[in-house]
Length: 143
Image (tube, one colour):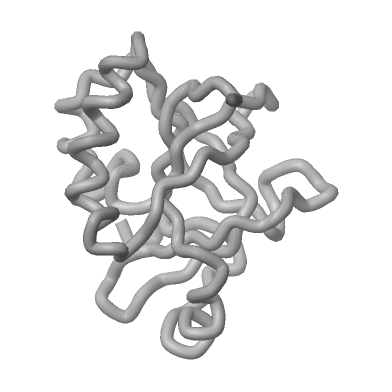
């Protein structure tokens, strides 16, 4: 199995977001700007939805990349505790979203693997009808 290096947040958990305080109370070791390959949508009830996709040919930033933050933890136990709390916050058990391990590209070009809360590709037709796609991949204006 691929090693997990942290988690990737792209919505209200980002700096400036309404749930950023939740993230800080999990005692991350570090937070840095990063990108994940995917399509990003703004849902009608005011939350983002990321649908993973294959990496574009061009490196981020640019079309096909979603901007967010890579969040690192000192050890696996800290990461697992943070994920357990986050899964509840984001509704993984209610099947509002799922958690997947995806490649993440940091601002300096380094690559890691991170847990990302995503919407499955099967939901794409509904998202295309009911949500607003954010072609620049940045949910920041909604923070």
